[in-house]
Image (tube, rainbow, N blue to C red):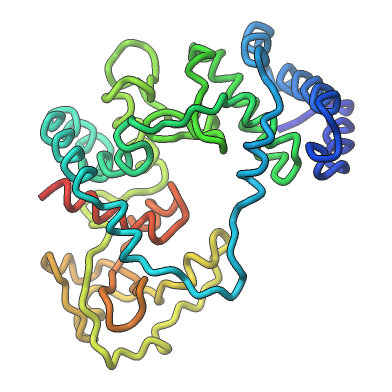
Length: 341
């Protein structure tokens, strides 16, 4: 996206400051806001949206602290166990609430699945994981949080773009007071970043607005649209639990490709084999029949050999596109399965 020379100069100057939020006071932040105003105007944000979006924007040092605490952990630390995570994220209240939503909205869910190919239960599971079905959507003022993160400079380009996307949401008709969410800028029931909202949020109830905060229909349709856009393949499961024979040659099955995104996540996956090949190696599904013989899958054993393994398909990678964490993706799939039972 092009920018005029003076704005390029401003961005470069601010980028050179690095941790400006720690070294400068509010005066430095106010100067940075002026540069954001110029960038927003240059990218086509209306004067009205700029005035509304900048109203009340303040430097939030707590947001900066939370961002600097990421990702954490020593480089060579042993990965934590999945089972405790599974118990806390695929728990009885989340399953029961998900089942209630699943049963109450079958007509709508079925229509969305028919259109997009994304399973009804996956839509519900994402909603449950992201915001506990709307109960926890975040209370941070999004423009303040995004401006603070951009000012800090650790991921300036990302958060500058998201700040301007939040202003464009106002131009789309989203009320300024709706712009609340997580410290990292995610908002609404599906916890979309502003840029994702602009690209993929959908109006499914016909009121002319993509309301991912209070509309159940818009929330579910928007989640499904995200997954369809990310490449979900109709009729293919995300994966399933398997028992793995003790003598499996895991070294010979190790993946050989280094993923450009989230390499630590993908290095825990085996190489791709067909379901026929996995069956021949002695793996046994624990809770469902084998899918088609030619469906490709990778093996992941999140708690190591001797514990439950999972064969995961290309659709599992779509869940990872939403949140690049094996624990997250596995628990979404398992919650979806539990909701559907």
